[in-house]
Length: 446
Image (cartoon, rainbow, N blue to C red; front, side, top):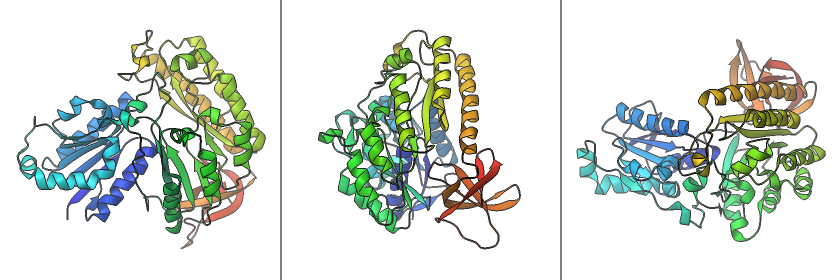
């Protein structure tokens, strides 16, 4: 039995594909072992969203080769898809798999074992890697993968689409993932039914651009899919992945607010709160339109959790433009923000723009927004003090010497309940009152 170690980098889409690859390998007779153990095969599911992600991908590839020089090293995913011929010349890599070949991981490995045994035994470096990368720009059909179980026991990510047609000027992802390809509705429903049957209470709908679900078939279909999932017996919670702000119309907000299984937790990608920067980014909304979206959600939900992504140090971003963004994020009053320093990506329009911002300026601006995020996040949680909430418990943890069951509310607020003995709240929905802060990011439930 061959031993396989896998390591995942990147987003929820990568995590979903990672779980499916691991599942396929296990079902095909491979033994899955931790990445820090010796294995016959190491698979690194790479990311390329930033230069840091590229570097981490390369580091994990070389770490695996150093751990066992005789092992087969497989690099898969976005970094592989965009690195071009350079990936073939990488001496530490034996097999390189693009994004639309992950579903073939088992057959690719088996072919390597059977056909390339002499290459595998004799490869000393400098020999080219086996390249399983196809032109993803021309892909028009969703590459079907099916998940039956994940490492988590309460929540499962379900991928409903791939690709993006937006081509924001800073983003390499359309080149790594291709154009929008929506998964068949019945395939999604079948997978969720299986996940629910396996005991999962919550699903997270994920994709590269889930707001585009269905447009490659002629019309948006996300609402239609949500209605069918909401009617599914046994499914308790539906959490949405990142949404395009423009999808949240009055009708959209009204309809989803009538589906109580949909969590009032909305991740609306912002990137900048300054209109001039948004134009250079090729984002298709203004700050004012974005704000109207958040007001619509607050019209239909009491204290929804609104989270976002913000990029600091985009080419040409002046101090005044940054201050506009800082003021805007405080005006929206986000629950959480993911703050990224602009990363120059070869092949994107932004990479050729003048007035690139220094790393020192990016770090300073990032720190300013991080402080704002911390203040807003604590204030949002404080708003739930002495309120009745529902928590889906996930794991037992020791905190400050005491045992607690820890989980999340529909708003994705982390909550903990003190426990004694053998009490088992795993995967249970429990109601209680938030009484205090246990830690800055964890509230106490009684």
